[in-house]
Image: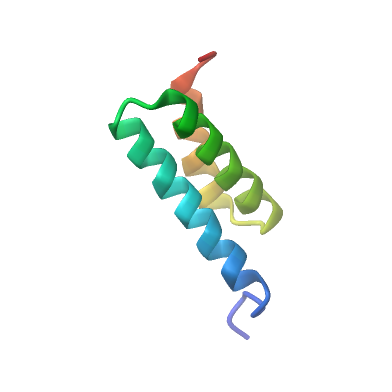
Length: 67
């Protein structure tokens, strides 16, 4: 009907929370937290088959390089 089951909505929201937390950490210069939260968001977006969000988070992780 709407493309998302009721069970996946909390996971989607959690993915956005992790992504935003990662971006906040990025703005604060906290590379460790940035990488950790973006990786968590990436895992959720990948599992939930959310390609736009997954690709956006992957692009942020790619900017980190090997750090």
